[in-house]
Length: 393
Image (tube, rainbow, N blue to C red; front, side):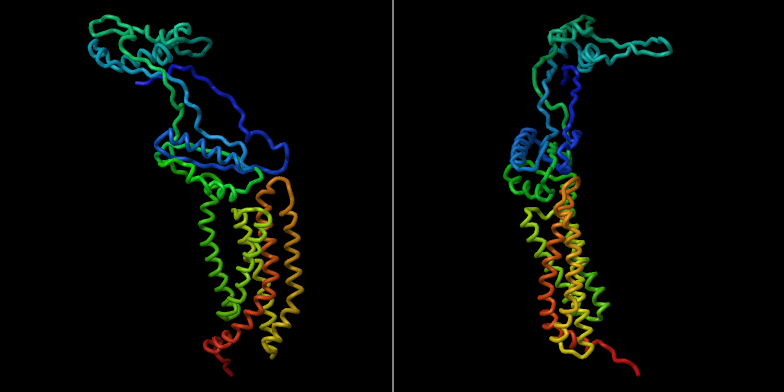
């Protein structure tokens, strides 16, 4: 059996999260990683290596773990042979120690001023301070004789964890940090770069909290993009009564990705959760440039002009509204992209991604969409002859 003899101590401390941000430069984002293993030794090595690695990156602040230093304790091992010879079992020894040191045994109670107080039995404080006091406990044998505990147990000093946490039925160590001036995507990518080489064999990891949600969002981002592209194609095909012209319009979507990547590279940001949100918003914005060009070109072709003449006229008529709408949105995003204050770390990546996507889409759409329209418009007219129905007179 194992019995802890150290007195209970309540540590009072103030976490960094409770201290307000006196700089006012922004807010911190919580960051959590869980290390799992069946060995505390491996978890300790993994914890030390990962904490040291994260400390090297600017932006990780207040790094802490739930793995405290081992607490000192005394192990009480029963000498079974001696105890059996005297007719003393393990429960008698445990009850004697618990009664003498922890006040678990209630023997009576008394009332005073309409309040009831329990009376418990234990040694006084002067006889509960040393191991020698423990050895002086006497137990009654089967022959009704009293023997000291000293000859029935072997007491050794050791150390152990005060609390053992589990995750997925394995022992775990959680590493906590706050991200200040570092986006969540950049923190996750930095951690993944070397975490596999830092962890010993038998130790696995898992992101939790905001980091876990960002990883899940990244996995679902591709499916959301694919579904939105399919729905957009269906709607455009119905509106234009064509299977080719929606492709011409939707070519603006990959053109915006070029601007997003360039903007993130120049600003030093990573493809984070908020960039994904900005990109989803961008998909609805960049398509309107191609819609204007195609609409004006279709109207000119209906009036009897050739494809080249229709495209030139569409470019002249659509240039002004394209510039107006694009620059209006870009200038609206500039305060979010370069502004400070609370939440700037979350707003800036989204705004920068939108600005880069709008600019690249505006420039490239004016060149790529007309060229693509001229190349595949003959195919569009040929297909329409196959499924269009003539008017009934």
